[in-house]
Amino acid sequence: MTDLAAPTAGAEWPTRPRPRIRSFVIFAALVVFTIYAGREVGFTLSTSWEIWTNPLWEKFWPVPWDWVLTRENVFDPLIETFQIAIVSTIIGCSLAMPISFAMSRLTAPNRPTYYVSKSVMNVVRAVPDLFWAKLLVTAIGIGAFAGAWALSIFSLAVMVKLFSETIDGADPRPLEAAQAAGGRHTPSVRMGVLPTVFPAYVAYALYVFELNIRASIVLGLVGAGGVGRVVEAQRQFFRFDRILGILIIIFCVVFVIEQISVALRRRLV
Amino acid sequence: MIRFDNVSVTYRGGVKALRNIDLTIEDGEFVVIVGLSGAGKSTLLRALNGLVPATGGSIDFNGTEVVGASAAEMREIRSDMGMIFQTFNLALRTTVINNVLMGRLSYVPAWRSTFGLWPAEERVKAMQALERVGIVDKAYVRASDLSGGQQQRVGIARALAQEPKVMLADEPVAALDPVTSRHVMGDLQRINQDLGITTLVNLHFLDLAREYGRRLIGLRDGYLVYDGDIDDVDDQTFMEIYGRAITEEDLMAGVELADHEADEAAAEVADE
Image (cartoon, rainbow over all chains, first blue to last red; front, side, top):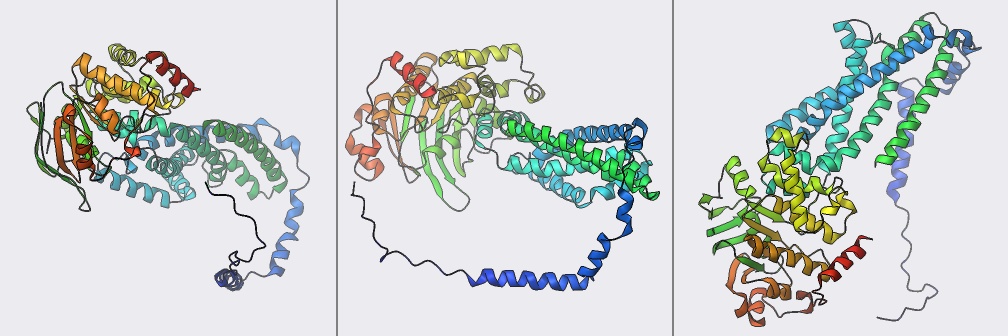
């Protein structure tokens, strides 16, 4: 052990490095680019002001609560939204379990399965959820059924991305042990990898459920059932006061669900 | 019987881990393999159960060729070889019994193990394997809640549950303290003596090698440089295997605590 050195006034301390010129350059470039992009799309502060002073906003008030707080206008469609979200979360996440294992380098049974599943899922994810909804509404008709299918596909796409990357990062050593015991591929993955990643799977499923609640409202706008369809109908009649009431209810419900989901997820990880 | 005939392993990237190994191990032997890290000890064990494919030569295990075996043959070979790992390799987020059941994977249909529908007699076998290493009371505890020594005994139970003919232990005590190390080595010794299971143990502590081994194999840079009775081994032999003088770090310089109760007490303390 050497003795502790005595503190000095700083004659031998290294000099503090100068701030990098690069950061200034990046900041300046961002400012220039923002101004340029704003010009190109015709964004000016005066037109933004006009948006906020539009008489449209006055139509949001007062909220007709006696219309909003009824079963047929809001609560039944809201329950339908819930049903769409639950069904599509279950379908999407169930399908995502085996596909995610096929999509991870650690657990793919062979190279072709890995590349095929990965490519197919990239294509599925590249199509936005709203487009899926439009497509399915066109294919199987307006209603909750189309919405549930669109969101199932959306859940699957989100879930495989999150979950397969978690599997990639899982500890490979228990899998090695299962293989060393002479296990076949699928049971080895089940015994050696699934226990490690299962809490993450449940946490992601809850997160996907949150996403689906919000997305199923948006999907209603294109005719895919749920409370979103009521919002769309009222928008066509310019009943923004009713829309505000619905939005307040949706906000409260989504807020409560998210709090529950966040609390559950925190206990899992 | 295990016979290595001119076996070589070259990893992708060109590292030669084993070079022209000739080696015969009879049933029921207790063999200790020593050598510096990177000498090829781990590769030797993994070539035997096919976790690392040999790139040259042939390995005969009870009349079956390991090198180039098909997937089904390889599962058959592996089911006869239990493996114990330096880092235990347990699935930490599940119970001890589920980890031990891994050792029974080759005995049940894939759909049963995949859906967790283990037959009752398989669960009995797993419990009996835990009894052998004295931690059957922990069967339904999460593996992550055990101490290092207890985790390694779960690893041994998992290997025992295979009812193997050969036990491969890759640095089984490198992550353990001296007291627990002796307990684990004692378990391996009893498995060899009482059950007649051929045992190959990689070690880097020379005093442990001398204490528990009967036959010693020395590896250096992938070459087999020593093979003989442990009683004929002296410090000069170790110097030849290691290519340098023996230092403090090559010895566990252990706490002498043969008492079984003391081991248990230490394990309990570690558990807290």
